[in-house]
Image 1 (cartoon, rainbow, N blue to C red):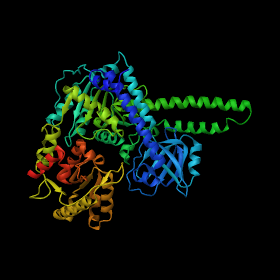
Image 2 (cartoon, rainbow, N blue to C red):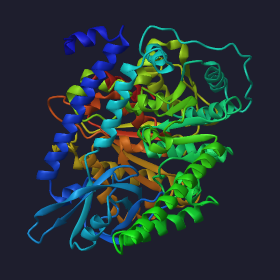
Image 3 (tube, helix red, strand yellow):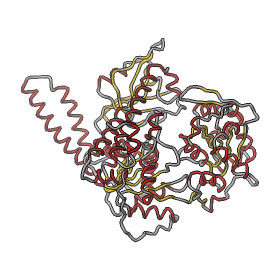
Length: 634
């Protein structure tokens, strides 16, 4: 038997041992998350779940109906605490509960699946009519996220398929991506793209030449999405259809929207996270119900439901006649569904879905020449293999120097689950990597430190942003040291982490002072926007509440965004304020040790970056000491 330690030593040379290790690590994460869900369900009150975005309470039931995919759904609306960000989105399982007057929670004995969710309303696929009747008859109804067995089951199946594969394209890709087999490239005459910069152009050409794998490494602001869209567009000149995936629905929405803007026919599997009519029009469900044959299919389904209610009545002859009619109607309905699906898939150039949703039943039997995985550095390796099974070659895009996948089990993360497929391939197959080097977001002085620390100093600022600023005689970076202010962090729970109220209050003072320097009228006229970032949820929540009650900031609230580092991934603002929170005598900085998060935080700013932190605490770490030194020199 191979031990856990031995596997770690051998996996670099053996794809099979590496995948077996991935199974063990994923099993650790699965068990940890399942236990964590059980603990939260049993011990955490409804109010805390609501605040953490895990629960809506109370909710009201709306209309129930059969959707275009013949699923029985019901609308659920939420009327309280609607300003709290929630984690409900397409494909996630939920459970319903009733809370009695004395606070006792009773869960209902079924689970359902989210079909659509926005800020205050969701549409939920129900297991049957009796479940709908049960929740409609329940007072003090709530809904919460349920443990997602389906995603884990799908990832375990994918790993098992890759392990078992022999003498086929999947086994070849396994040995190329994880082993020592060299990746191969076609020899093509380079295509010119005058609207791209040289590193973007090189990346697109490498994608077109790759026979097995290509990586588009896009540091902050370097136009990774622009490059990926161009690569997809050019690939479609050579292939009739491609599969485009990402870890999250939000990332799928983003790349899909850019492709649609380019005129590409996208078929989106799953519902978008944002209410956007343009995106909704490209979803499989909306396309399905807009097909010319759908009216006939809908009529047949309704007839089948009506006949089903009569199939147990009457004489044997009458029942037999109804069953025969139902059989003919089912055959016709199946034929119509096959025809509609064929038309939808044949006309689409891009099939877009999350990595887990690429296992959706409607994609069964579909195979693609090329798979593009956006934000690949945020995806678990096992999730990537779900989609890779359907393709002959794969293009990974993202930045493994930014946020890693979210992993809840510390031992699994430390054991290697956090190391993504993109990171591993980039390390082992450097010839497959194209680094985008010109960034279009940040003032040069904001860019220099992350470029030196994370990207070997290879980034350069585009001329149009190099010296761009808001105020004359202003410095692009400021560090406000709280070491002499006797600010102290407080611990507020394992999920929310730390809070430093005095530092938050100082941040708001500095924010108001900077707004005054710029001038309120100018900010409103030019729509100068601000981001306020903290690594800790408790600090974010405190800042949000303070801003809500601050009358001086009221005119600018639409231009202020307050969120965690994770919540700011992929975003940018003219001005960024960061509250680092940590202030203690031991020099403990917790997950500020994850420097990839700090890379994200400090690269959100276009023209001005202000960081608040206690240098005495943070300078124990080499990164923060050098960051403070760098800012002090500016």
